[in-house]
Length: 388
Image 1 (cartoon, helix red, strand yellow):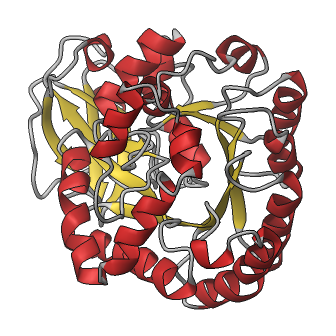
Image 2 (tube, helix red, strand yellow):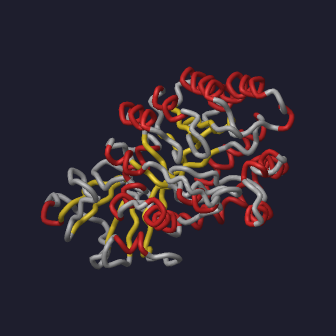
Image 3 (tube, rainbow, N blue to C red):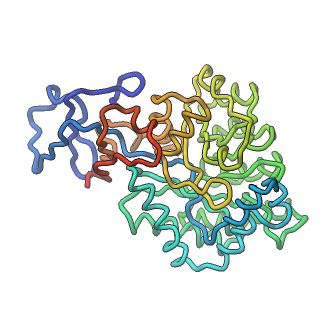
């Protein structure tokens, strides 16, 4: 994915030089500076090299699983019915609250390793299964610990407004007070938050409650993003765009007003085909309208225990192509350049450009389409994180 070229930007007979973990040169070998004096030369034998992949929406840190709910849905029970009867997100909240930080790290590492094995070098991890200061902090610290355990960049997102915890039953506004006035300032003060998210939905929080969370995030100097229009049209994407949100995610029910607002604000659309597939949804996101409006489209695993227990970004690309009719080029851009934009990380990741982190995925493929076309097959030859 070469700088200054439209689409993927293919360079034949290319060369990438790394110094101190950053790209010192990326381009055609013939254009390389004569002064390049490599301490080590690695011949990739004409393999394809892309930027390291970016999973820009995950809930990777949690305890327990929800396989029994999967079985319930197979027997005809809806996701909303399960959630309203005490299952869903709250089932994972109970398990996560019972786990300590070390246990969360240990249980999350295999999920992270599965992503890294497919060339992922940057991953966003949300909180949102603690729903109390102690436990939200525990999740965010576990996410940061994963970056010390593995060679990967982890971006942390505070999702305190994910669900209403049982101790606040019937008092959603009071819980939002807790999120805005207690949790967010304390966790931001510890340096644990890179961005703030919320779940604006009938089984989540209202537009007005989400507005309060965004106001608090803005006061703390933090960028926002939003779970928007997944199950219904709550006009959350328009609200997010009004705050120049990094991204609005899901978007199955986004309308023309939402798309116009996102296009004007530069908000990235993050599509999550794993959740669409796993929940057997039928309302497809408005991909054509997003394309026509020039909105960057990212895709991500949405890795979580309830609605997308998916730890394969390669499979995610195939799902995006088959279910949402995205092209090979769109899928590859969706897990590199657009994904970096969705995290506010374009200055360091997403393309192969001088000065960016030397995060690479090296592939045993004949053409890029293979990365989207195959299912259950991993052609990764090597992964490079910060030049190593």
